[in-house]
Image 1 (tube, rainbow, N blue to C red):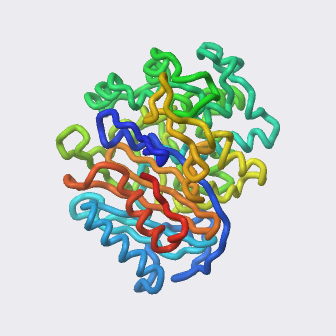
Image 2 (cartoon, helix red, strand yellow):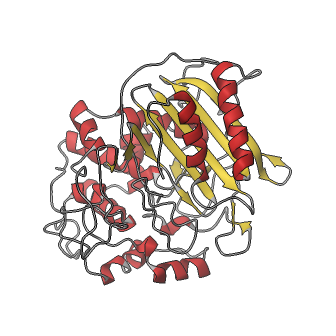
Image 3 (cartoon, rainbow, N blue to C red):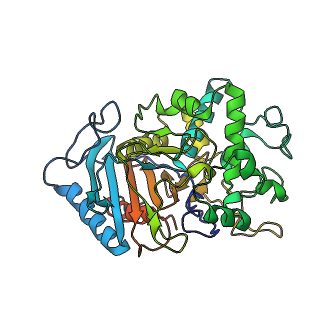
Length: 416
């Protein structure tokens, strides 16, 4: 569900789809003073009962961030930008620029699709289940997924870290053709998995790295059998509930809670509204999440700092054994088996880039990023929507990269 800073959000057909192909990033730990309005995060993680604009005229860092964001909005020809920046959990700035629809201003509390952010939550939930001794990370999955080829060699760790060798259905041209023709279609996990399972594996499980949405469909199925809970209930128990992310939820329909940030895309050639296109293809039912910008910033800080994890589990979140894997072979091209380095690699549902820990969903006209830099205790959350002339790619990343360059120049948020 994302562009991968590692960085092959493989293009199927649409600018939309390449979005979900990315996942999360690393962490550091320095400190910086909170600037601008210093409002502590409230119980919901957003400085109070509502997700609202920072009060009063912006000054200092808040003004600097908004100036950068306004310029990025103009340069990228964006329809809307929502953003929130916090330091050590304290608000620097929260705002929304542009329009949701013509004549309807964008607001910070408008909800949008958060795509692969769910994978960061699932990675954290898996590690919590390991800490609770309900499962082991290196358990093979044949008990729960007996029909999966190589199930006796594929572990939960491999599914969560994208090292199983399974193809990605999102980059399959046959799937892309079906999705483009029927954006309102409801997909089942079985239908989605039929695409990667018609191919041989890229490599033997655990020996390389390649991104596949199918890994998370399988991991979710295994976790539901392990716990006896549907994935949305499990996420609420393990992640969103403890973090009080009250505006982050999964729907089993294409609905988005009100107020809604509307999306538009030219993925099918014509610039059209895509707000309620069916997102069931992105992952399993119960893990198709929506959120707002304040919850996204809270998620960035909590996941990126390992707030819910032991120090040992947090280290595993950041590198479950992926560093050093990848690289092209005769069977798997370098554009698929991306080289995982210390500076840029996939963790357990997150991406690590130059110390930043992140996730970066982008599909069906929505783009977003949650990013956390432990060395500065700096959390960035950005959501964007498109006009008819917005360039391809995850434009929320571009906005966040510019903000990060100003606030933490020593740690480039260099995703592309």
